[in-house]
Length: 333
Ligand code: UT7
Image 1 (cartoon, rainbow, N blue to C red):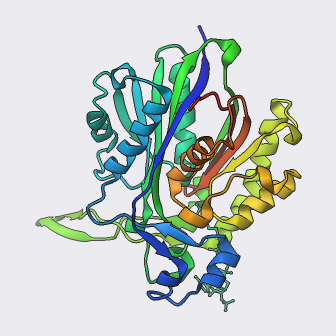
Image 2 (cartoon, protein in one colour):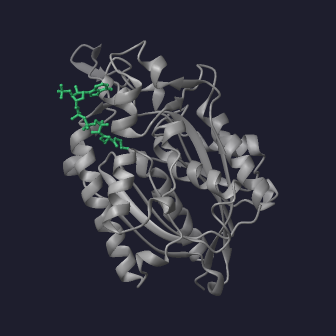
Image 3 (cartoon, rainbow, N blue to C red):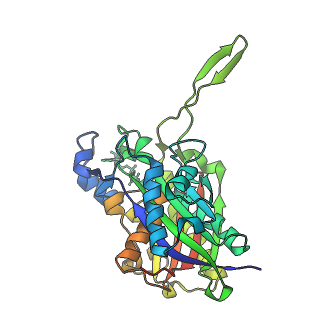
């Protein structure tokens, strides 16, 4: 029996260290005025060496569980969207253990800045088909560990954070997930990468191996920008049309927080007033898989997003990958 999906809780967590644009100007040739005017970012959070992704994720997850009013033992699944796990084998089980969610399966999912959206839609399938009842979806990244702090074209953009959403199976009349669409195009993937370093070492005579390790983030900002302002309006347009929803009836536009100019361009394409565009880029920069749940949690907790509000959401990033979802918020503080 197909079931509905209700979004009933949110949570978030960020590292305490703030790095302002002026401070960044001490490290690399840049300035507050350039960064603010080209991106909308004023400061970002940087994890200390001791701050683990699994702990940041746990804090966001715990807060979402509290808002939902759930016992950790009632969770069936935890999906952690991240490109920067503590452990390449996966960090979701560490979050499961800290939460004490003894009955939950837990796995990581990687789709860069689209990761939260891809994880949300993946997790939703288990609720839709009725095989699970309670799922936690986390988006968390620590890209500050992987940026080249001497590359001013990319290092100004990124920050660390985590956000989580609690999803519950419900009857179809209360279904909050109205529609979604996910896309990938690996043929255009070379404009944003966190690639393995080439490090070939001899193993035994006649056999060599590659020693694991990664290069810092490499980005062609202009190509990513063009991709975002072309594909995000296009996928949102498709989703609104298929679901017969007019942009006027949206309460909020919730986009991956990459650049204020991208948010404005997408809003203008649909004539959505900028007051309906959720943005916390100024304070956190681009936190990759975390941006969407981090922003949602802030807007739920400060009362902007209210129960039954209709939200159009889109994520985009490396892969290339992008996606969109239309949903209603159903949580209560
Ligand atoms: O999740 C997805 C992640 N990635 C993105 O979303 C990236 C999308 N792209 C962007 O947001 C923008 O392309 C950037 C913000 C990265 C760059 O903005 P832009 O308007 O495309 O600038 P640009 O690369 O065309 O550079 C313009 C000028 C250049 O100087 P010249 O050649 O015109 O003299 C750059 O060298 O600005 C210079 N510049 C800087 N100046 C001060 C580039 N970065 C900086 C900087 N500070 N940090």
